[in-house]
Image 1: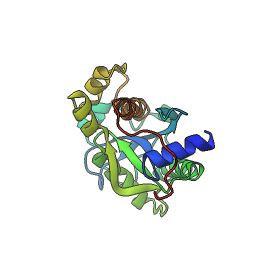
Image 2: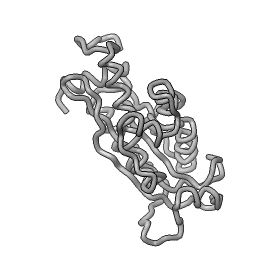
Image 3: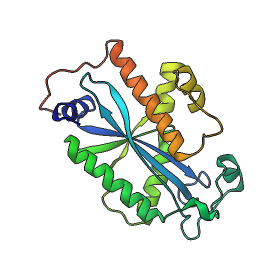
Image 4: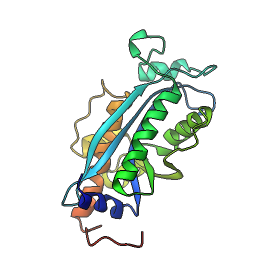
Length: 215
């Protein structure tokens, strides 16, 4: 990314860097239920101020010791935590690698902090923060309570809050058979978020101008 593009994304989001996140879990309770998959998609901005999905990183995650696994959640996602082909890693490795990559992107773009973009973001943030606390990770690059929630944005832009339906209304191909994989859903959420941001610009919203020194 060029220096000019770095300035674009820094200015567009007031010095914050949006990073798309998706998690798959063994239930709904962040304190007790397992984190099973985690993915992040980095975002880039072209010379015209168009936001685009960039690199995606994803990990299958071993349930932490004593983690609860709700059968209904596993049936919904289709994840088998005991499958040796998952090539899963501990939470500390998955989050450590992802946080390190996000911190590098923050530095490279001159931003001050990452902001999570997720579909029903409060859920993903709760699980990520709980896992970071379990692993005693002190340098969480994400803002602790501010998010971009694509369920809310899609409800406004397309009249639907379900990811699959919002993507279809936005003209983004969506496969129900591939859904509920953190990597797949993360990429689709990134495409949805970028589309909404870019469409807002087309309609006369935020426009590129000279960088504002007072971010």
